[in-house]
Amino acid sequence: MEIYLDNSATTKVCPEAVAAAVRAMEQEYGNAASLHRKGFLAEQEILSAKRSIAKAIACQPEELYFTSGATESNNWALIGAAMAHKRRGNRFITTTIEHASVLHTMDYLESQGFEVVRVSPNADGNFDPQMFADAVNDRTILVSCMLVNNETGLRLPVEAIAKAVKRKNSETLMHTDAVQGFLKLPFRVKNTGIDLLSASGHKVYAPKGIGILYRRKGVRILPLLHGGEQQNGERPGTDNVPLIAAFGAAVEAYFPHQRAYLDQYTALCSRLCGRLAEIPGVSIHHDAERMVPYILNISCERLRSEVLMHYLEQAEIYVSSGSACARGEKSHVLRAMGLPDTEIDTALRISFSKDTTPEMVDAFADRLATAFTELEKIGR
Ligand code: PMP
Image 1 (cartoon, protein in one colour):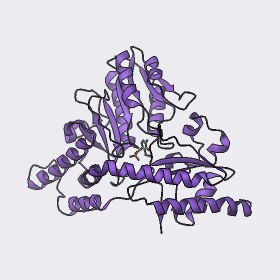
Image 2: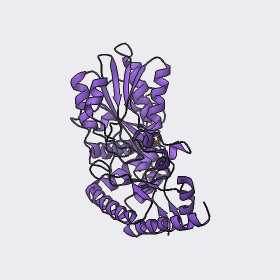
Image 3: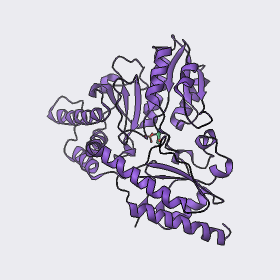
Image 4: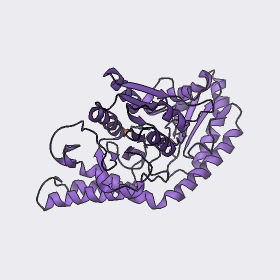
């Protein structure tokens, strides 16, 4: 039995998304910009996907733009805001635990002369909205704060941060990288003060290479790409109808069961925490109050993450030694959260999907327990 517990890195595409992509490739293969019937049918696929996604986050379909993924959405939100508002200000604010696609875009903006303030978690590992408001001045263009951290599962208070930021400077834009929370958590963007939101298809059972940027009506950012009139000329390029249709179908299939899946993750998480607590040497970095139940970060005393990951792989169990995007480097997130090196070097991330079962979780815990004795035996 293959036990895939690395769903925060990516998910298996669901049958509904596969069917939609095939339909778009084999039947509705027209160019959505074409004025004939084939073009019209392709355009309908796009509108339908937009409606499905808009419903899931409570926004208007016209406020959504399709991108090549959240990396592009994050780049567009930040660089697009910088270019549109550089006369009004020069400051950007973010956290120290963002994904590389926000952190490195901020580094780029800094290299271009913008000022970047990076907010660290407090001693309890939390982000207090006031810390962001304190960093906002009258020259602050944008604040970017992720919804859920991809390594620890920490749920950040982005709604409260947006309110605190707007109270200090109503012109400051609020962006959230919602990749690890989108669809899995009930989240309504309406009336939150959030102006820009990024999400990605492949974390929610759609294929890789498709994402969205939500841009609240009236919010101004400049385009990164220049070309034709697709997506109002704001994100030109022939519309990727197969992936867009697949994204819409994946959301449509998941959304009605959002609550039930969340309950399922909660049950799986407490089962796994219970099993792991019985294994000497495992420390669980999880707090149900502050963290989502579908991402679990642990450390395994004296067993290096990579060694453990490959040991588990031999039993067809797939987990992550951190985030897939930060291969080999010491986790900046666990460091920012104040974990000692010994726990960072031995960290594992386990992440669930709608298809994860209690048996899979048990098999993982059993194998992990064996790792402590077997890997010790061969001297690692
Ligand atoms: N933000 C976060 C929090 C992520 O986890 C990821 C994916 N690892 C991304 C952004 C980038 O998304 P994409 O793969 O669609 O570019």
